[in-house]
Structures are given as C-alpha cells and as structure tokens.
Image (cartoon, rainbow, N blue to C red):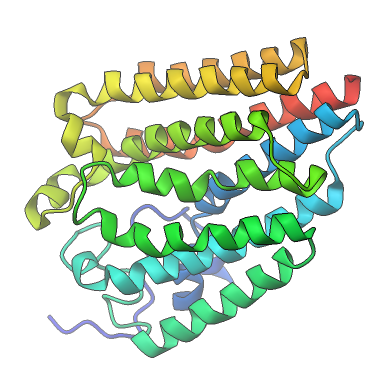
Length: 312
C-alpha cells in the first residue's frame, strides 16, 4: 500500500499526546521527531550524569548548590546533542530501521525527511551544542571535544558487537566528567568513578529498553545485550545496576561528601533494585516503562547530591 511521505505518524515508544504531535507545525514535526523531542527520556538520561557531576563537585568544593548557569547550559546542550546524535544514528541506521516494526515509521525510513535534510539538521544541532560548550573553561571544552569519536562510532556497534550498550554508555555517561571539570577545571578520582557508574547504569537501562526489540533484532541480525543474555537478562541487569550503585558510593567516598552522599547512593540503588524485581523479559511495554523510570532514579541521585552540598 502506498504510504504518503507527508502522513503524520509517530512511533510506538513516543510519549502519547506530546506537544510535538498536538501543536508543532506540520512541516517541523518530522524534524522534531528526528531529534526525539517527543521522547524526552533520551535527553534526560544524557543530562543527568552532567547534573550528578555538577552537584557532587559543588558538595566537594564546599558550595551550597551546583552552579545554576552550568545546570542550564547542560540542559540545553543535552537536548541539542541528544537530538544531533539521534539524527546521526537514524542516518546510519535508515535501512535497518525500515526492517524493524518499532522504527520503520521514523522520519528517514518512512520518507518524511530526506537524507540531505537530515544531514543539515545534524549540523544545526551540533552548532547549538558547540555554542553551549564554548561557555565553559578551556579544559571542559577540550573534554567535550574528546567525546566526538565515541559518538561517531556508536551507531555501527550493533552490527559487530553483542554489547553496543557499552559504547552507548561511554557516550551517555560523558557528562559525569563534564560537571566536575566545569567546576574545577580538572578531573579527579571521584568523577572517574561517577563516569564508570553512569556507564554501567546505561548498560543496565538500555538492556531493559532492548527487550522490546528482541524478536525484530533476531530477524535483521542486530546485536544487543538483551539478545546476548537471553533468559539471563534479569540477573545481568541486576549485576550492572549493583556495580553502578557501588561505583556511585565509591565516587561519594572519593569526593569526601559524607553521609548524605551515601544516603543518595542508597536511594538510587533502591530504585534500581525495584526495576530489576519488576522487570519481565516477555513484557515489552513494561520494559519501556521501567526504562523511562530511570529519569526518576537519576533525579533522586541529583537531589541527594544537591542536598549534600546544601547541608555541607
């Protein structure tokens, strides 16, 4: 059946009734969907390690709260760079996406956005990200540029390795270094441990997310941690989450923040444990709900670190 390239249709895992679908001009909707604006969990998960790092750095520096300007810059940068990364990912994966039920209605495989239009859109979003990055100190700017190589390679990993979630973690966790660097102009053990915590957290939640696609991924040959672990996916996620919580506690210890920092790590761990207990490999909708709940897990940790700074 002929499918009009101008038909207005979203994808199954988008937030229902999002303003993109209700209020955005029709000609902009495919581009906003390329940037995943109607799926805000992505930029939240990119942003939260930045905010963790900024709050932990503030507490370590004896400040009463993380720098508000830095928090705003990280928010703008996360939305822009998540959009740029998603658009780039869709350019690379446009043929694979056309063969997977959950992704075949994305703007590129469905024909609603041309390849040329998508490339231009990537450039515009990267420009916004660059303008944000240039507001920080020289060390942080250099650190931001250092992540580019990982971002460029990530979309290809699902074709070659069974744990593309690890490479995604290297990308999404980078903010755990940036917040500390923005405060101190250098790195230390605490942000490195926080970075490792964010990597293992990302592997865990993206493995949960990949449960939705197991059958389609098997058909088209896409590799994922959910397929690799199979029936053992639940204990595997539990292991990654446990390691993440332990590394967060290590970051707290290395920063010298104290009791409130440990309580924040414990609350974060409790949320992750709840996800593991309630996940079901056979329940795709539940997997999506648990994946999205990681915004709350991340906000719990950020709030705890911010409280540690306030009560110093």
